[in-house]
Image (cartoon, rainbow, N blue to C red; front, top):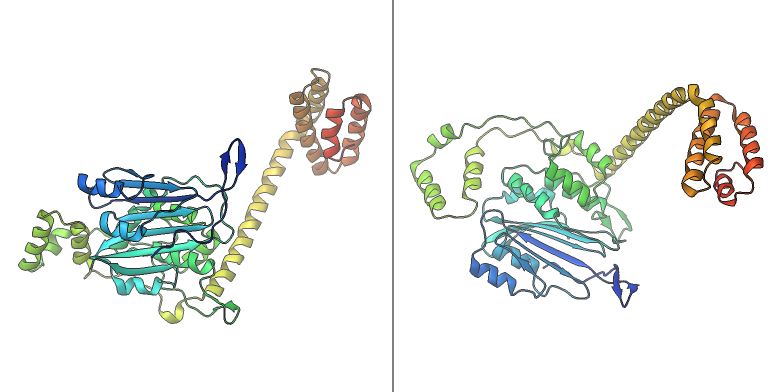
Length: 395
């Protein structure tokens, strides 16, 4: 059961014009395979006086209170996807699957105690991904995240386990491998099978990385062992022709009866016999410590690349600025001889910052300071202007 009322951190509310702190919790459920009947909508609507319900979605938010039902049970009975966020640092994403649609043995290596689990709930299976940021987020305004995640459910059914691997990264990054008895991390724990396609994430997967704040460098380090996805067209006509008649009849009957998820189950059944992408052997898999070290290396390389790019950009800017140096000094003088306003002072100071950078580039800072000194002498009676220049170290 998901606990929705522990580890509380304060957000922001207003009472009698005074800003105070409060809890904030956001719950959202969506359907994927079908829409709710009018009776089901009415039943969901009765779960809370705060809830907003449509045929495909339900949203409820709380401040100073809690949702009195188990979100997982609500998901299992009525919906296909659920997202929860609280400003004290908790985030949960859950998907509901018809039993047998998801390969539980293939999912098992990605499961992490108290973070990632796949378990039967009633007549279905629920995949739960639950994380907690110790420092929380203060005030939050969630909404729309679940819509960007729902396609990931279909990907999982199709055998795309990139979401599970990214969730595993988040779990271990958040300290799931910490051994409190030893007061240290379990550094020799191996990564689960590395799925193909981590080098090029779909918008839904990138949204998961962004919303759950997964270290981009860690994702890049993991992706180095991920093969590209081979896009091969599937000839479903040929595969269906090879199915026994009884299996065809069973799928057709379930489809005609409107059973949820039958189309995806059929595609999964048909493609199960196709060649699967290579996954590294267990001895080739990396530990989280190795992934973290590689991520640190990649961050340093990226920082160097950005620094070099910034250096080249600065040189190009200074080279374009140099022929206009005299003109810019005149522009500064013109501005200061005009209106005594904050906007004028800001603009003049901004131009002088560029001239200061140019002086450093040309190795003539003494010339720049000499001209500044003359301006200071001329306009020393303007405290607002002097305050700006003093903050730059020119006065």
